[in-house]
Length: 355
Image 1: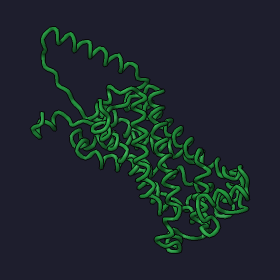
Image 2: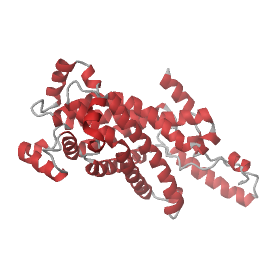
Image 3: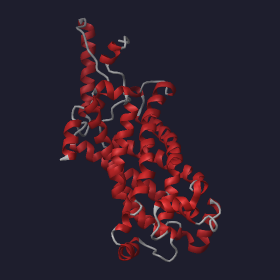
């Protein structure tokens, strides 16, 4: 019922039009002819879309884009993630990023760098499905609730609330695989594969063992995702307004994807900083049996929770940029509707004397 009502409410979302409403007056015959050509061209472009904005197919394809973007990118950086986790939980042994790679290669070989790739791929694919798919659903649902003018005026808050709502569900899907991944990567001798780890975790800690880090995961991922989406949306808007020398409509698909990558990297740097202390707690929590998030945070101390920040900035910056690039590329490849950056509605322009 919840998701059906969200999808139904999204059909007439102001995001469909980019917050812009145009009113046309009767024009001379030659101008009218030109306008007819423009309308026909726009109609032809619209018929090129593979689905309607706000339709079930649109949201499902957004979820597919999330699966591809999150699953592939997180799996790709598994070696760096493994070293980062080990640096967080055993700083005495893994003194730096370079040292962490050397020690891991010496003890486990090249294959050891990809330890935990399976739960990483599965977990973050599921997370991407909910993160990107539900973000689009919640964004248009909330915009409908507050109306077109408020959706423009308070769009940053809209991005924050929509992304937080989506990530709440995404982390529930991610938690079991994240717990297994950290166990495999940071507990020597526990398990080498996902097939080994799952039954061991179930027998030792029960189902609760897969969700014991859910709250700190929310603490890490919800601020991260809020920053990821809100910062990205506003950065794209600013880049097209102040940096890109022409309107988005005149940019090629390739140029648009370059803007997407740049905005994604900027957002990723802020994401890493905001979510890093909780990320350290999650890594340490899944290593220590029976400990609570508060116990781990107290033991680490304020400075200890910032261990491994530099590699995480590199990892998350690259990761976030790549995710947005892949997600937008999937939209282009599947010919999905991609509304332009939001513009002030005509009704609001008149109220503010800007019409």
